[in-house]
Image 1 (cartoon, rainbow, N blue to C red):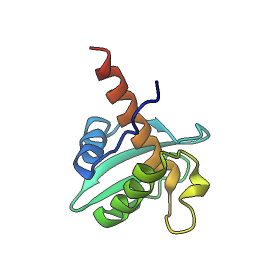
Image 2: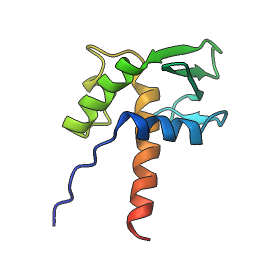
Image 3: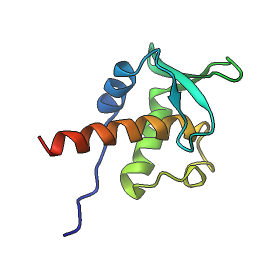
Length: 106
């Protein structure tokens, strides 16, 4: 039986960010680690390797979510043409999805 695609909203994305603030998280490929936090109308990603924060505004995050909701893809190359820092955003989407799948069985 095929499963229905999961669609994530911006509030769900922010809720996942908030639940994981100040935790060390792996990027989608697992090759690097970062921290995430919310800011006024943005989400900030800070790679541990550089310590340089990358802010993505709400509109930018929504663009990632639109692509994910349409494609269900976790391949960063599917986002690289128009989006920056897909590895961080996809890692948060993956955390959200794990939480949703865990909920299904309860």
